[in-house]
Length: 244
Image (tube, rainbow, N blue to C red; front, side, top):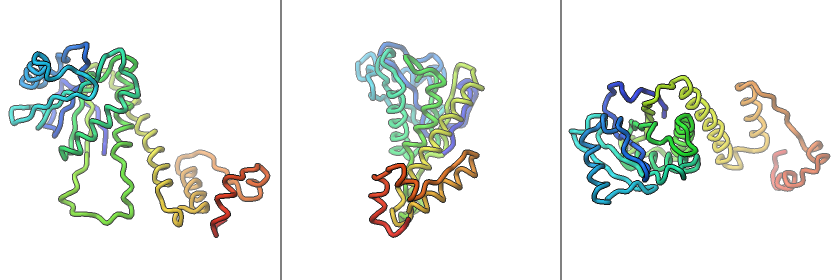
């Protein structure tokens, strides 16, 4: 999956899913109304009838051929602006990825500015979306027998459409979120390997290769030094293994 940045004002190809954030104590961004007039009128009607209030996790969905920028557009409730924190944004990212999976969407467009409020800046939103989209999409299926290719639909592109033009800062935020996710997923791969594959020796080899590739230092601690450092927990676990 790749994360891209684009101006909301720029005409884009039709996505599978458009997601816009909405706070209880706010109104729909005028940019969102500009992107999808019919969508905006449907959301206004839902608000008027109290079908949708913007509470955290609530959604309003509109789809059809007359939706110009996506096959389906969703407004996602974010609660009150003052309560919007980084943890809320992480949970929201998980919801977006889950919606994409349920809809078998390959291309998801997110109106980035609509998720910025409270403790979450525009850069924060970009960073968290870039990081958590990858973390939420993670699956360790290395040893799983592949199913029919036609049954497997994965999210290919998460497009962050911005209104406020601070592209360079957003690029840095996305790059940082991507780096954090990459490191986390490497750790998850190591953890999820079976113990007969990821032995202590194999883990040491993995660490050395990472150090060489990424340019950081790596020092291996073997049994004698482990005993001197009184690392009894590690030594106790290793007693049941034929590998040093």
